[in-house]
Image 1: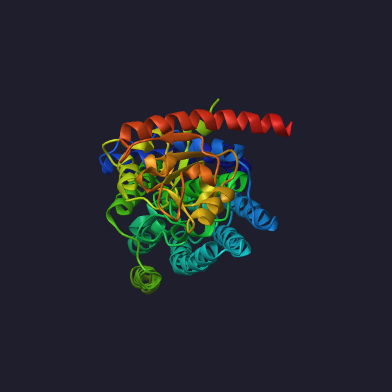
Image 2: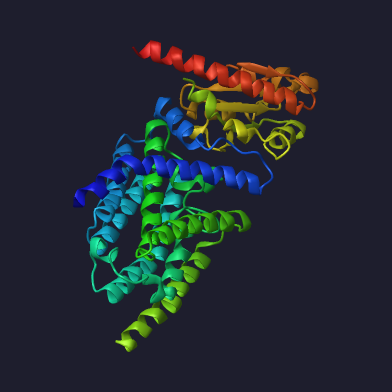
Length: 282
Length: 145
Protein backbone atom coordinates (compact mmCIF):
# COMPACT_ATOMS: atom_id res chain seq x y z
CA UNK A 1 0.00 0.00 0.00
CA UNK A 2 3.03 2.28 -0.42
CA UNK A 3 1.29 4.16 -3.24
CA UNK A 4 -1.76 5.13 -1.16
CA UNK A 5 -0.05 8.11 0.50
CA UNK A 6 1.07 9.42 -2.88
CA UNK A 7 -2.40 9.02 -4.38
CA UNK A 8 -4.03 10.76 -1.40
CA UNK A 9 -1.49 13.57 -1.77
CA UNK A 10 -2.36 14.10 -5.46
CA UNK A 11 -6.10 14.19 -4.72
CA UNK A 12 -6.32 15.89 -1.32
CA UNK A 13 -3.33 18.25 -1.21
CA UNK A 14 -4.89 20.93 -3.45
CA UNK A 15 -7.94 21.10 -1.16
CA UNK A 16 -5.86 21.25 2.01
CA UNK A 17 -3.36 23.69 0.50
CA UNK A 18 -6.07 25.94 -0.92
CA UNK A 19 -7.93 25.95 2.36
CA UNK A 20 -4.72 26.76 4.26
CA UNK A 21 -4.12 29.60 1.83
CA UNK A 22 -7.66 30.91 2.47
CA UNK A 23 -7.26 30.58 6.25
CA UNK A 24 -3.96 32.43 5.87
CA UNK A 25 -5.73 35.39 4.25
CA UNK A 26 -8.54 35.36 6.80
CA UNK A 27 -6.21 35.31 9.80
CA UNK A 28 -3.95 37.93 8.22
CA UNK A 29 -6.98 40.19 7.70
CA UNK A 30 -8.07 39.72 11.32
CA UNK A 31 -4.57 40.57 12.53
CA UNK A 32 -4.84 43.82 10.54
CA UNK A 33 -8.30 44.63 11.93
CA UNK A 34 -10.13 43.73 8.70
CA UNK A 35 -12.94 41.26 8.07
CA UNK A 36 -11.05 39.50 5.31
CA UNK A 37 -12.19 37.35 2.39
CA UNK A 38 -14.03 34.02 2.82
CA UNK A 39 -11.83 31.00 3.56
CA UNK A 40 -12.65 29.62 0.08
CA UNK A 41 -11.15 32.72 -1.56
CA UNK A 42 -8.07 30.87 -2.85
CA UNK A 43 -10.36 28.50 -4.82
CA UNK A 44 -12.36 31.44 -6.22
CA UNK A 45 -9.11 33.05 -7.35
CA UNK A 46 -7.91 29.96 -9.18
CA UNK A 47 -11.38 29.36 -10.71
CA UNK A 48 -11.26 32.89 -12.03
CA UNK A 49 -7.72 32.58 -13.38
CA UNK A 50 -8.76 29.46 -15.32
CA UNK A 51 -11.38 31.54 -17.14
CA UNK A 52 -9.07 34.41 -18.02
CA UNK A 53 -7.15 34.93 -21.20
CA UNK A 54 -3.60 33.52 -21.02
CA UNK A 55 -1.27 36.31 -22.14
CA UNK A 56 2.35 35.25 -22.68
CA UNK A 57 5.53 36.87 -23.91
CA UNK A 58 6.81 33.55 -25.28
CA UNK A 59 4.68 30.39 -25.60
CA UNK A 60 7.47 28.24 -24.09
CA UNK A 61 7.30 30.06 -20.74
CA UNK A 62 4.08 28.13 -20.05
CA UNK A 63 5.90 24.82 -20.44
CA UNK A 64 8.36 25.62 -17.64
CA UNK A 65 5.51 26.28 -15.23
CA UNK A 66 3.87 22.99 -16.27
CA UNK A 67 7.10 21.25 -15.28
CA UNK A 68 7.20 23.26 -12.04
CA UNK A 69 3.74 21.91 -11.17
CA UNK A 70 4.59 18.34 -12.24
CA UNK A 71 7.84 18.24 -10.25
CA UNK A 72 6.22 19.80 -7.19
CA UNK A 73 3.57 17.06 -7.27
CA UNK A 74 6.32 14.47 -7.90
CA UNK A 75 8.19 15.74 -4.80
CA UNK A 76 5.11 15.35 -2.64
CA UNK A 77 4.21 11.95 -4.08
CA UNK A 78 7.72 10.64 -3.36
CA UNK A 79 7.52 12.01 0.16
CA UNK A 80 4.02 10.81 1.05
CA UNK A 81 4.49 7.37 -0.49
CA UNK A 82 7.48 6.90 1.84
CA UNK A 83 10.30 7.35 -0.68
CA UNK A 84 13.91 8.38 -0.27
CA UNK A 85 14.32 11.71 1.52
CA UNK A 86 17.37 12.69 -0.56
CA UNK A 87 15.48 12.06 -3.79
CA UNK A 88 12.62 14.16 -2.41
CA UNK A 89 15.02 17.07 -1.85
CA UNK A 90 16.48 16.72 -5.35
CA UNK A 91 12.98 16.67 -6.85
CA UNK A 92 12.12 19.79 -4.84
CA UNK A 93 15.21 21.53 -6.21
CA UNK A 94 14.28 20.41 -9.73
CA UNK A 95 10.83 21.99 -9.33
CA UNK A 96 12.47 25.19 -8.10
CA UNK A 97 14.83 25.23 -11.08
CA UNK A 98 11.91 25.06 -13.52
CA UNK A 99 10.20 27.90 -11.66
CA UNK A 100 13.36 30.02 -12.03
CA UNK A 101 13.77 29.10 -15.72
CA UNK A 102 10.16 30.13 -16.36
CA UNK A 103 10.92 33.51 -14.82
CA UNK A 104 14.01 33.94 -17.01
CA UNK A 105 12.16 32.80 -20.14
CA UNK A 106 9.57 35.56 -19.81
CA UNK A 107 12.42 38.06 -20.39
CA UNK A 108 10.85 40.96 -18.58
CA UNK A 109 13.05 42.95 -16.19
CA UNK A 110 10.64 42.26 -13.32
CA UNK A 111 10.45 38.51 -13.74
CA UNK A 112 14.20 38.48 -14.48
CA UNK A 113 14.98 40.08 -11.12
CA UNK A 114 12.41 37.76 -9.53
CA UNK A 115 14.19 34.74 -11.05
CA UNK A 116 17.56 35.94 -9.76
CA UNK A 117 16.10 36.44 -6.30
CA UNK A 118 14.44 33.02 -6.41
CA UNK A 119 17.85 31.49 -7.22
CA UNK A 120 19.28 33.26 -4.16
CA UNK A 121 16.40 32.01 -2.05
CA UNK A 122 17.03 28.44 -3.20
CA UNK A 123 20.70 28.89 -2.36
CA UNK A 124 19.64 30.14 1.09
CA UNK A 125 17.31 27.30 2.07
CA UNK A 126 19.19 24.39 0.49
CA UNK A 127 21.78 23.90 3.33
CA UNK A 128 19.10 23.80 6.03
CA UNK A 129 17.06 21.22 4.09
CA UNK A 130 20.11 19.03 3.48
CA UNK A 131 21.18 19.31 7.13
CA UNK A 132 17.63 18.24 8.10
CA UNK A 133 17.96 15.13 5.92
CA UNK A 134 21.42 14.33 7.32
CA UNK A 135 20.24 14.87 10.89
CA UNK A 136 17.21 12.66 10.41
CA UNK A 137 19.46 9.97 8.95
CA UNK A 138 21.83 10.14 11.92
CA UNK A 139 18.93 9.63 14.33
CA UNK A 140 16.91 7.03 12.44
CA UNK A 141 19.70 5.44 10.32
CA UNK A 142 17.44 5.65 7.27
CA UNK A 143 16.66 8.01 4.41
CA UNK A 144 13.38 6.18 3.68
CA UNK A 145 10.41 8.28 4.81
CA UNK A 146 8.43 5.06 5.34
CA UNK A 147 10.95 3.96 7.98
CA UNK A 148 11.48 7.42 9.46
CA UNK A 149 7.80 7.82 10.37
CA UNK A 150 7.96 4.53 12.29
CA UNK A 151 10.93 5.63 14.40
CA UNK A 152 9.93 4.88 18.02
CA UNK A 153 11.03 8.19 19.63
CA UNK A 154 10.35 11.84 18.80
CA UNK A 155 13.01 12.80 16.26
CA UNK A 156 13.02 16.43 17.40
CA UNK A 157 14.35 15.42 20.82
CA UNK A 158 17.70 14.66 19.19
CA UNK A 159 17.45 17.40 16.57
CA UNK A 160 16.27 20.67 18.18
CA UNK A 161 18.94 22.73 16.39
CA UNK A 162 18.26 21.11 13.04
CA UNK A 163 14.53 21.71 13.47
CA UNK A 164 15.16 25.36 14.30
CA UNK A 165 17.24 25.76 11.13
CA UNK A 166 14.47 24.08 9.11
CA UNK A 167 11.78 26.22 10.74
CA UNK A 168 13.81 29.33 9.90
CA UNK A 169 13.75 28.58 6.16
CA UNK A 170 10.00 27.76 6.18
CA UNK A 171 9.44 31.49 5.69
CA UNK A 172 11.29 31.25 2.36
CA UNK A 173 9.30 28.24 1.16
CA UNK A 174 5.95 29.73 2.22
CA UNK A 175 6.93 32.97 0.45
CA UNK A 176 6.24 35.09 3.49
CA UNK A 177 7.83 38.30 4.74
CA UNK A 178 10.65 38.93 5.57
CA UNK A 179 11.89 36.46 2.93
CA UNK A 180 9.36 36.91 0.08
CA UNK A 181 11.91 38.45 -2.27
CA UNK A 182 11.21 36.61 -5.51
CA UNK A 183 7.42 36.84 -5.49
CA UNK A 184 5.06 38.02 -2.78
CA UNK A 185 1.35 37.64 -2.12
CA UNK A 186 1.18 41.25 -1.01
CA UNK A 187 2.55 42.82 -4.16
CA UNK A 188 1.48 46.30 -5.15
CA UNK A 189 4.27 46.64 -7.70
CA UNK A 190 5.61 44.47 -10.50
CA UNK A 191 9.03 44.28 -8.86
CA UNK A 192 7.54 42.75 -5.74
CA UNK A 193 5.46 40.31 -7.78
CA UNK A 194 8.76 39.34 -9.38
CA UNK A 195 8.87 35.95 -11.03
CA UNK A 196 5.10 35.67 -11.64
CA UNK A 197 4.75 39.15 -13.16
CA UNK A 198 4.56 37.90 -16.75
CA UNK A 199 2.19 35.02 -16.06
CA UNK A 200 -1.56 35.25 -16.30
CA UNK A 201 -4.70 33.17 -16.67
CA UNK A 202 -4.32 29.39 -16.71
CA UNK A 203 -0.54 29.43 -16.16
CA UNK A 204 -0.83 31.64 -13.08
CA UNK A 205 -3.50 29.25 -11.77
CA UNK A 206 -1.05 26.36 -12.20
CA UNK A 207 1.62 28.26 -10.23
CA UNK A 208 -0.95 28.87 -7.49
CA UNK A 209 -1.91 25.16 -7.39
CA UNK A 210 1.78 24.19 -7.29
CA UNK A 211 2.15 26.44 -4.23
CA UNK A 212 -0.74 24.61 -2.56
CA UNK A 213 1.02 21.28 -3.13
CA UNK A 214 4.21 22.87 -1.76
CA UNK A 215 2.37 24.00 1.41
CA UNK A 216 1.21 20.47 2.17
CA UNK A 217 4.59 18.92 1.39
CA UNK A 218 6.44 21.37 3.68
CA UNK A 219 3.99 20.82 6.54
CA UNK A 220 4.48 17.08 5.95
CA UNK A 221 8.21 17.62 6.43
CA UNK A 222 7.53 19.44 9.70
CA UNK A 223 5.34 16.49 10.76
CA UNK A 224 8.29 14.15 10.19
CA UNK A 225 10.11 15.63 13.21
CA UNK A 226 7.18 14.59 15.46
CA UNK A 227 6.18 11.44 13.58
CA UNK A 228 6.09 9.09 16.59
CA UNK A 229 3.15 11.07 17.99
CA UNK A 230 0.75 11.77 15.07
CA UNK A 231 -1.55 14.14 17.00
CA UNK A 232 1.41 16.21 18.19
CA UNK A 233 2.82 16.10 14.64
CA UNK A 234 -0.30 17.56 13.02
CA UNK A 235 -0.63 20.12 15.83
CA UNK A 236 2.99 21.23 15.44
CA UNK A 237 2.67 21.45 11.65
CA UNK A 238 -0.37 23.74 12.04
CA UNK A 239 1.40 25.71 14.77
CA UNK A 240 4.40 26.20 12.47
CA UNK A 241 2.02 27.50 9.80
CA UNK A 242 0.42 29.92 12.27
CA UNK A 243 3.87 31.14 13.38
CA UNK A 244 4.67 31.88 9.73
CA UNK A 245 1.54 34.06 9.51
CA UNK A 246 2.56 36.00 12.62
CA UNK A 247 6.10 36.48 11.29
CA UNK A 248 4.65 37.54 7.92
CA UNK A 249 2.54 40.23 9.56
CA UNK A 250 5.15 41.68 11.91
CA UNK A 251 8.17 41.91 9.62
CA UNK A 252 9.26 43.86 6.57
CA UNK A 253 10.99 42.42 3.49
CA UNK A 254 14.78 42.20 3.91
CA UNK A 255 17.64 42.52 1.42
CA UNK A 256 19.02 39.35 -0.14
CA UNK A 257 22.39 39.77 1.63
CA UNK A 258 20.61 39.57 4.97
CA UNK A 259 18.52 36.62 3.81
CA UNK A 260 21.57 34.62 2.72
CA UNK A 261 23.65 35.48 5.80
CA UNK A 262 20.80 34.74 8.22
CA UNK A 263 19.61 31.45 6.73
CA UNK A 264 23.15 30.09 6.22
CA UNK A 265 24.16 31.34 9.65
CA UNK A 266 21.26 29.60 11.37
CA UNK A 267 21.69 26.45 9.27
CA UNK A 268 25.40 26.07 9.98
CA UNK A 269 25.42 27.28 13.60
CA UNK A 270 22.21 25.69 14.99
CA UNK A 271 22.01 22.80 12.50
CA UNK A 272 25.77 22.23 12.32
CA UNK A 273 26.21 22.26 16.09
CA UNK A 274 23.39 19.76 16.43
CA UNK A 275 24.98 17.44 13.84
CA UNK A 276 28.39 17.81 15.52
CA UNK A 277 26.89 16.86 18.88
CA UNK A 278 25.27 13.75 17.37
CA UNK A 279 28.60 12.77 15.77
CA UNK A 280 30.54 13.17 19.02
CA UNK A 281 27.87 11.30 20.96
CA UNK A 282 28.35 8.48 18.47
CA UNK B 1 -21.36 30.38 -11.25
CA UNK B 2 -19.63 33.71 -11.12
CA UNK B 3 -15.99 32.90 -10.46
CA UNK B 4 -14.93 36.25 -11.86
CA UNK B 5 -17.25 38.22 -9.64
CA UNK B 6 -15.81 36.52 -6.56
CA UNK B 7 -12.22 37.45 -7.22
CA UNK B 8 -11.87 40.83 -8.91
CA UNK B 9 -8.27 41.97 -8.85
CA UNK B 10 -7.77 45.65 -9.49
CA UNK B 11 -4.98 47.77 -10.90
CA UNK B 12 -4.99 51.43 -10.11
CA UNK B 13 -3.42 54.10 -12.33
CA UNK B 14 -3.20 57.78 -11.47
CA UNK B 15 -3.37 59.81 -14.69
CA UNK B 16 -2.89 63.37 -13.53
CA UNK B 17 -5.14 63.72 -10.55
CA UNK B 18 -4.64 65.76 -7.40
CA UNK B 19 -4.28 62.43 -5.48
CA UNK B 20 -7.65 62.96 -3.79
CA UNK B 21 -9.27 60.07 -5.65
CA UNK B 22 -6.16 57.90 -5.23
CA UNK B 23 -6.31 58.33 -1.49
CA UNK B 24 -10.01 57.37 -1.61
CA UNK B 25 -9.20 54.26 -3.68
CA UNK B 26 -6.58 53.14 -1.17
CA UNK B 27 -8.86 54.08 1.73
CA UNK B 28 -11.48 51.68 0.37
CA UNK B 29 -8.95 48.85 0.82
CA UNK B 30 -8.24 49.82 4.42
CA UNK B 31 -9.84 48.19 7.50
CA UNK B 32 -12.90 50.49 7.62
CA UNK B 33 -14.27 49.52 4.20
CA UNK B 34 -12.07 46.46 3.54
CA UNK B 35 -12.74 45.71 -0.12
CA UNK B 36 -10.74 42.49 0.28
CA UNK B 37 -13.75 40.87 1.93
CA UNK B 38 -15.20 40.72 -1.60
CA UNK B 39 -11.97 39.12 -2.84
CA UNK B 40 -10.57 42.36 -4.21
CA UNK B 41 -6.77 42.48 -4.41
CA UNK B 42 -4.78 45.55 -5.40
CA UNK B 43 -2.28 43.91 -7.77
CA UNK B 44 -0.24 46.67 -9.36
CA UNK B 45 0.37 44.32 -12.27
CA UNK B 46 -1.82 44.65 -15.40
CA UNK B 47 -1.36 40.98 -16.34
CA UNK B 48 -3.01 39.85 -13.10
CA UNK B 49 -5.75 42.49 -13.06
CA UNK B 50 -9.43 42.30 -13.97
CA UNK B 51 -10.51 45.86 -13.24
CA UNK B 52 -8.61 48.99 -14.25
CA UNK B 53 -9.28 51.96 -11.98
CA UNK B 54 -8.27 55.22 -13.64
CA UNK B 55 -8.07 58.48 -11.72
CA UNK B 56 -7.26 61.90 -13.14
CA UNK B 57 -7.60 63.30 -16.62
CA UNK B 58 -5.89 62.06 -19.76
CA UNK B 59 -3.11 64.26 -21.12
CA UNK B 60 -0.50 63.96 -23.86
CA UNK B 61 2.01 62.35 -21.50
CA UNK B 62 -0.08 59.59 -19.96
CA UNK B 63 -2.13 58.72 -23.06
CA UNK B 64 0.23 55.98 -24.21
CA UNK B 65 0.72 54.68 -20.65
CA UNK B 66 -3.03 54.18 -20.08
CA UNK B 67 -3.38 52.53 -23.49
CA UNK B 68 -0.44 50.25 -22.71
CA UNK B 69 -1.81 49.17 -19.32
CA UNK B 70 -5.20 48.44 -20.86
CA UNK B 71 -3.67 46.37 -23.67
CA UNK B 72 -1.61 44.31 -21.21
CA UNK B 73 -4.66 43.21 -19.23
CA UNK B 74 -6.01 39.76 -20.15
CA UNK B 75 -9.66 39.49 -21.25
CA UNK B 76 -12.29 39.79 -19.79
CA UNK B 77 -11.55 43.21 -18.29
CA UNK B 78 -13.48 46.23 -17.05
CA UNK B 79 -12.43 49.89 -16.91
CA UNK B 80 -13.73 52.22 -14.22
CA UNK B 81 -13.16 55.99 -14.44
CA UNK B 82 -12.84 57.17 -10.84
CA UNK B 83 -13.60 60.83 -10.05
CA UNK B 84 -14.79 63.67 -12.21
CA UNK B 85 -11.36 64.24 -13.81
CA UNK B 86 -11.26 60.70 -15.19
CA UNK B 87 -14.91 61.01 -16.21
CA UNK B 88 -14.70 64.19 -18.25
CA UNK B 89 -11.48 66.03 -17.50
CA UNK B 90 -13.16 67.94 -14.67
CA UNK B 91 -11.86 71.40 -13.94
CA UNK B 92 -8.75 70.65 -16.00
CA UNK B 93 -10.78 70.08 -19.17
CA UNK B 94 -9.82 73.44 -20.68
CA UNK B 95 -6.08 73.01 -20.06
CA UNK B 96 -3.94 73.05 -23.20
CA UNK B 97 -2.50 69.56 -22.68
CA UNK B 98 -5.59 67.82 -21.29
CA UNK B 99 -7.54 65.68 -23.70
CA UNK B 100 -10.46 64.95 -21.40
CA UNK B 101 -11.69 61.87 -19.59
CA UNK B 102 -10.32 58.33 -19.68
CA UNK B 103 -12.73 57.39 -22.50
CA UNK B 104 -10.58 59.36 -24.95
CA UNK B 105 -8.08 56.48 -24.92
CA UNK B 106 -9.70 53.31 -23.56
CA UNK B 107 -13.31 52.07 -23.55
CA UNK B 108 -14.69 53.02 -20.12
CA UNK B 109 -17.45 50.83 -18.64
CA UNK B 110 -18.30 52.78 -15.50
CA UNK B 111 -18.07 56.44 -14.56
CA UNK B 112 -17.85 57.31 -10.86
CA UNK B 113 -18.24 61.09 -10.50
CA UNK B 114 -17.17 63.01 -7.41
CA UNK B 115 -14.38 65.31 -6.28
CA UNK B 116 -13.00 63.44 -4.53
CA UNK B 117 -15.02 60.28 -5.08
CA UNK B 118 -16.82 58.82 -2.05
CA UNK B 119 -15.83 55.30 -0.88
CA UNK B 120 -19.51 54.27 -1.04
CA UNK B 121 -19.68 55.26 -4.71
CA UNK B 122 -16.45 53.40 -5.34
CA UNK B 123 -17.72 50.20 -3.71
CA UNK B 124 -20.94 50.58 -5.74
CA UNK B 125 -18.86 50.79 -8.92
CA UNK B 126 -16.80 47.77 -7.89
CA UNK B 127 -19.96 45.70 -7.39
CA UNK B 128 -21.33 46.82 -10.76
CA UNK B 129 -17.97 46.09 -12.38
CA UNK B 130 -17.82 42.48 -11.16
CA UNK B 131 -21.30 41.81 -12.53
CA UNK B 132 -20.14 43.10 -15.91
CA UNK B 133 -17.00 40.91 -15.70
CA UNK B 134 -19.19 37.80 -15.60
CA UNK B 135 -21.22 39.08 -18.55
CA UNK B 136 -18.06 39.75 -20.56
CA UNK B 137 -16.74 36.29 -19.72
CA UNK B 138 -19.94 34.70 -21.05
CA UNK B 139 -19.70 36.81 -24.21
CA UNK B 140 -16.06 35.74 -24.61
CA UNK B 141 -17.01 32.07 -24.29
CA UNK B 142 -19.86 32.43 -26.78
CA UNK B 143 -17.49 34.14 -29.20
CA UNK B 144 -15.00 31.30 -28.94
CA UNK B 145 -17.51 28.48 -29.32
